[in-house]
Length: 387
Ligand code: CAA
Image (cartoon, rainbow, N blue to C red):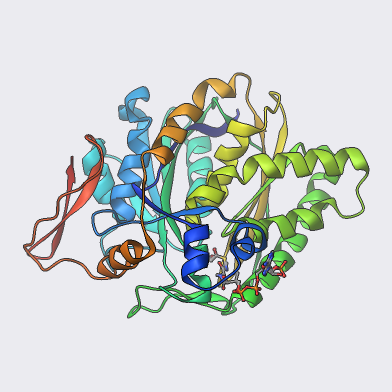
């Protein structure tokens, strides 16, 4: 029985910053951000969008096309959690009107969270082939105004339906995992912004990629040339480009070209959205499916990385007619609806969103009709509403 990704939904907030504007404001050469970091734009979440509301909005992209009664599992991966105890997934379950019998919880291991959720879902569906699972990764990457990490911020969510006989990607058995207790990126409970050793995190990421990619090829008796594409966790596109360079090192011209072309396709959405932590690898998978024109059956490698640190490599094959499940025009419209902020506007929106509103204060959203948003707290209970 094949199990895998049957639907993918994407959401990003309705505001963004242009990297050229940011470079000018920070007295940097724009090419450092555009080429050196590899980002064009970054989405900005105001106070009305958090991990929960973005996760609801991403799942709403496909919820009317699935049988809700079959959903037996809902797992939410995030490092932008809104509560120390209650799972983000419970708010989502209510908004989606899922049945009470669903098993639901939140997982955390930095950007690895959505992969952890996906692997739990894959195994769940194998044991319960008549049920399906929803997995969500939703994050706001915040390093702070004027920090070196500022250019690698972003916000958004990816939601996926995992089921038997999937319509998009059939996941292959096996994986290679590697973990070490290190401090490359973390966010203490008192802080709304991440702490990061940026250059060290890149070094560890590349090291974990090399280890897990080689171990996976060995385990499955595969060669690099067997892959039609490799997608990466993509905090900023330059970081993943460095991993792709390692992948093609020493390969023949045809393999190098194939993997370089697929990398170009896979980075398009990240260039405009920025870092979405747990959702980042899957945003690049979506970008690959929309831009690469890959044939059914193509073998796609996926490298997941979560700081702290945890790496995993696995693969899947594209299913016949997978294109029918992808709506590039709608994803482009979602990006194009965003309002471009001036840098002072972005700084105000960013800093305001570092605090929750006063308890009892009601927030309104300026997004499109039908968008879910965080409406403030009542007696410190978070309220989510649909515009
Ligand atoms: N034209 C073209 N390129 C230029 C340039 C110019 N004018 N000026 C500089 N560059 C290049 C540099 O050569 C450099 O390229 P290489 O990386 O190939 O050497 C690149 O631009 C960046 O320049 P610097 O290294 O000087 O930049 P910096 O010191 O300002 O820091 C950064 C960059 C380390 C990435 C910093 O932005 C940062 O710390 N970002 C956050 C790090 C991060 O996201 N880590 C990921 C952790 S994994 C994750 O997602 C976390 C998780 O699990 C939650």
